[in-house]
Length: 449
Ligand code: DOR
Image (cartoon, rainbow, N blue to C red):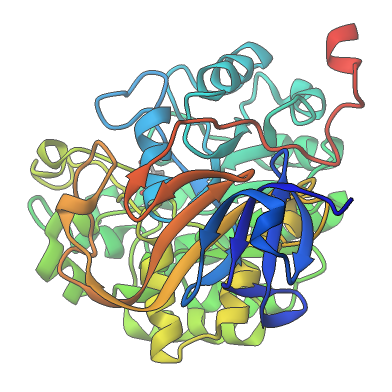
């Protein structure tokens, strides 16, 4: 008897490593079990995807969901709700919570808090500190760990490792790719007086391109010497992009939708402190080079750096205002709109948002549409024209820097392991599970201790 399926996605245009084709996808037990022409009679339920594109599930590898400790800004449920409303099927969450994710206990607590409560799948970065540097080789392999995150320049929270000795110690002992916030801390401290009270545009002058470039140069040098693989998060300057293009053997590169879309001074004039983030939004010349890097393949991945703060907090007077902006929900529509405008192809979007995460971080069974893989899909209507509004935002922050932006291309469905986490703006049952990695502990080792 022919194989049967729990759910069938029928009539959509599937965008995959093989190209674009109108094919059906049969799913059983959360896994893709068949791709081709499949009769609806073989499935318990059929989702009509005619007129829609089915993309591999979008994986956002940089979000801050604030739990534990800052749940007034966000928590794992609200952040993941925003994710699936925006078509994101899995997130990697950052360690600058309170307490920070710097121990096995803190990591296990996050995994427990997210399981079955988050709307999408998830992994958590382990934050590096001077104290836990010796434990990182074990910590990075624990279930649910996305790897090690270093703040080489300080941002929200107090995680910071900025001395050559500790960086080298970490680079030469961990095995997985290390993700890094790259700004030169000493220069940031020296230049604090560049900030002008009440003028958030001075944020981009204070945290200048030299601070980013010097830091990235140093990280590349230390990583090369130690034989480490590093991942430079939210690259914001043209000089770094050029430098990174000569160091692709060591470093992978993330850019954010906001650095690709917003420019100074216009962003500060329109958005004030809402445009304040680290590393800062830059001018058009830098942005052009980010697009050059994206077009030329220097950029590996797009992450949102979803960093929610409340409107009340953002309404303070700069520099007493926090840095960061929500982004997990707007990644897909903002970038699909760039696809519509011809800034990148749909195939490139798919690589940047799913296959790249699998490749960079060694995810098991996610990041492509293939038999045996998790049935994670981002189902989009490339023709839909919508205006992004604050009212649509599921994050506790309740605002977006893209409010009022008219876009073409919209997430219609978010499918996580065959389960409709979101369909036409309606949420399904939360059923998030930890993402699995090839470099994780061998089965049973966690229990054996
Ligand atoms: O602007 C930022 N805000 N950049 C970061 O790297 C951290 C983030 C936050 O956690 O608020």
